[in-house]
Length: 255
Image (cartoon, rainbow, N blue to C red; front, side):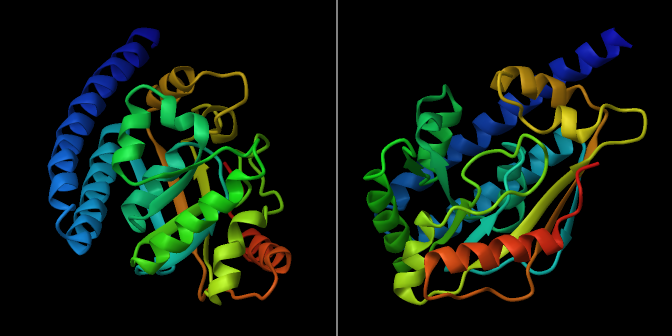
C-alpha cells in the first residue's frame, strides 16, 4: 500500500509540473499581448486559469460540485478559506484575480505563477498596506476584473468558518458595489484520511508536506456554493458580518 501511494504521489507530481509549465508558458506570451489590450489579457487569463484548474482536477482526481451561479466580471467575491486548493476551485468557476498574503510572492514557482496571474499581495502585519491593496482592488474592479478575497484572512485550522475581516471590503463600500460570496468545503472517500486532517493546510506543516498528503489520496470531493445574490452595505464591519452569516448558511461541514 505504501508503495502504491508513493507511486501515485510521484506520477501526479510529474503530471502537475508538466501541465502547469505548459499552461503558464502560454501565460507568459499572453502577458505580453495584454500590454496592447486589457480585454484580451482578462479573457486569456480567465481561460488559462479555467483550463489549468480543469487539468489539475483530473490529475488529482478531484470531483467538483458547483452550487449556484458564479458571478461574471466585474465582481468582488469573498469566500471562506480551508486550503490552497481553494484557488483551484475558484479558477475553475470564477476565473478571478486573487488577494493573497505577501509571503506567497516569494515562494518558488508558486510566487512566479501568482504574479503572472495579476495577484494582489498584502502584508497583513503592516496596517498601512491595507490602503495600498484597497486602491489596487478598486482599480481592478474599475478595469472590469473579477476580484476574490479570502475574508477570514487565513486558513481555518479547525475546518470551520470564522468571522470575516472588514478592512479589504472598503472598496466595495466606497463604490457602493454589492459583494458576491461562496462557501467552500471538502470531503474524502470512506476509508481515506479525513479531509479535515489532510486537505486543510495545518500550521507547522510545510507546503510540500501537505501537498504530498493530498496527492496520496485516491481522490476527494470539493463543493463551492455561490450565494443567490450579492450583498451590499454602507459600513464595512456590517457588510463583513452579513457576508460571514451568508457564507455560514451555505457551508457544508468538512467531511
